Length: 419
Image 1 (cartoon, rainbow, N blue to C red):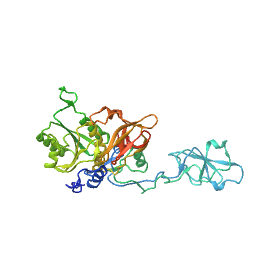
Image 2 (image 1 turned 135 degrees about the vertical axis):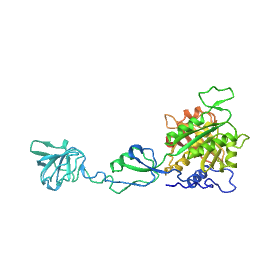
Image 3 (image 1 turned 180 degrees about the horizontal axis):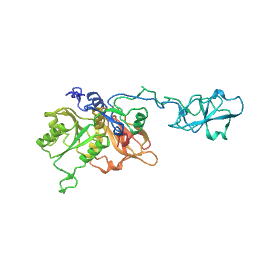
Image 4 (image 1 turned 90 degrees about the horizontal axis):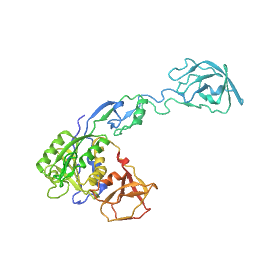
């Protein structure tokens, strides 16, 4: 399959827009992007976490034939005598899972049937073995059992030819079970999205190396690489580059050759040494880079040599939040996933806060023992300990708002983002 290139205006906002609201940026992502990866066929054992590239139909009914839901005795309901205590003679033989009974059960007789066994001709009802008395020749039980009891009908779960999963569905282990049960051995999926991660900043140094007093360890690149791996993408270390436009340009060029998308941290603002945004604007296709969000306002969404590129702030908290709120939805579209759901909860606040209108805010939070959302003591974007402390985010709306203890707020656990 030939994958069509992205349009140069895939991130374009209406003229005159200075600050992009969060919802508009997300809508832009979903509208302007499309899958950029080819398709391949994989066996079920390798399919968990993969994105379906075609609709999948059942190749066999589940169950393929009517079978017993219990260990017991099967008979024809209409052959039962009209009396309180019923005695049925036992027919020779039995029906077991994988060893069906050969023949027909005579009217007025009962046959031993085990769980999962194919229901033989002449049987339409099964009574649980705990509800009967048995001797060598008779099965005895009380009347009152309904017709068709304890049977699993053929195709009662899924019928052959039934649509099971649509294009864009991310396969989970439980989905694999359904595919296997319905005879689907191989599926067509999108190839794993390859995402390169680049960090910029002269002050950064990789952890594990000696650091001078004026240097800080690079937290963003290992964080983003591990986020990508958790999301099921192929994470590529695109390197770290000092604040030098030539070095960053070379890094972007190499990443565009090897990856389907690029994450860059640092240099996305408009300062003298913020070369990422300058390069994307002058030599790439930069359409929007100021989003009304806190933390994270300077966000670059652009194409570099035709490769979608996302520039995140250098502050780790801002980079983390922007990767969750904007990076993940974009990657899902690029990877072919139709799943854009983020599960949120309304919970009582265990904090007080006032915010001005204009920006959507995300606070690092966790639920206390009373189910209330606590927020981290500082909103500083460099306070990395707050990310490890938290289990999710509290989302505050774009409009001005005042939150007092006990008010309901929107809480998004990190599990909703696949972390």
